[in-house]
Length: 243
Figure 1 (cartoon, rainbow, N blue to C red):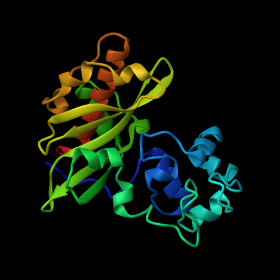
Figure 2: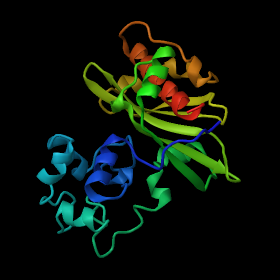
Figure 3: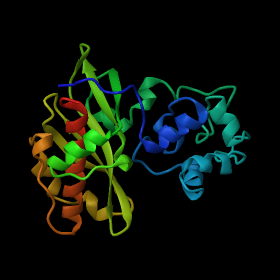
Figure 4: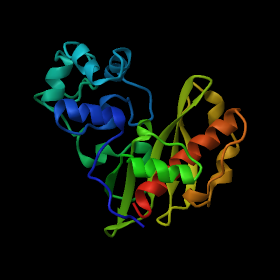
């Protein structure tokens, strides 16, 4: 199932963080409770500064978490600039592998202790292949695939991905079995689009192979969810199936 992929990486903003500071951060650098949850003060500062590499420079002298250390000082020392309890002298465990796996993902695979985060950095060939499957992917869809390991073998996958309805973002979580059949699609952070938490459309994806997910029709919320799920499933397929 899992053909060769690139080395460990994080979603696009964390990739920027790695480029700036030389290491991959936990989602907790910018989120209160892992990827897909609400932004913490550092994440909000980064967002307001433009969410680019230049944004790190713009906010480097701020102390987002109020612990007495500037953002850049903490990040350079491998302390979490978004958590008051993490300081250069006592950075804590925020970079431990368990902390790099969002809590919501871990909850979908109870008992799993070993994880393999894998790049989903799309090549031109991936984008072209996705188009043949009816999905339009681009560099903005780069992500991290979380793979739970049981007895050193893949037991499935998990992917957190964004959708947008009427200009407002929300986040979904897809899990699959090891054959890349959808186990579940669930709302994860729908604070800005509360109706997304109540949609009945999620159940229709269960059991489908990720390369056989339906295309969207229309522009209502269920169609937006369907389109996002189609893109997420296609990303999994092109990166993990014969990549």
